[in-house]
Length: 137
Ligand SMILES: [Cu+2]
Image 1 (spheres, rainbow, N blue to C red):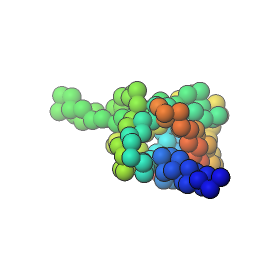
Image 2 (image 1 turned 90 degrees about the horizontal axis):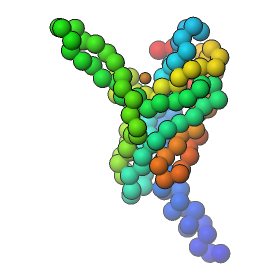
Image 3 (image 1 turned 120 degrees about the vertical axis):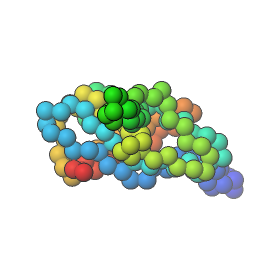
Image 4 (image 1 turned 180 degrees about the horizontal axis):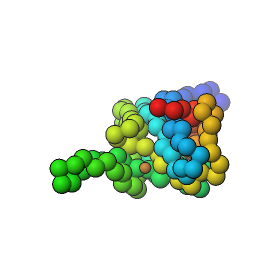
């Protein structure tokens, strides 16, 4: 099986890579929070993030931050996205003002410094586990 290590290397190249991020610490009465990270696609084909799961929340939605001008005021909001594409050989940042993973319906309050495991799901069936610290920012 001389080709086997080569095959593994090829598969590894197609995998998305997550650059460490963080989960926002929220007061215990707040049941939703946001997770941030950077996803890198080192492959030659686009990657489509379609969802995520975690044990600490009922569900995770993909959200895009947006600002709107309403009657002279800037209103900050967010809207759900069905997917987020990561083009070949590029990165997409999930950061305040851009995208976030919305953890909805927290099952218990999160603690500062705690590590939260998320499983990201891609359209091609790839799953990526990431572990993010809870931080107050
Ligand atoms: Cu959101």
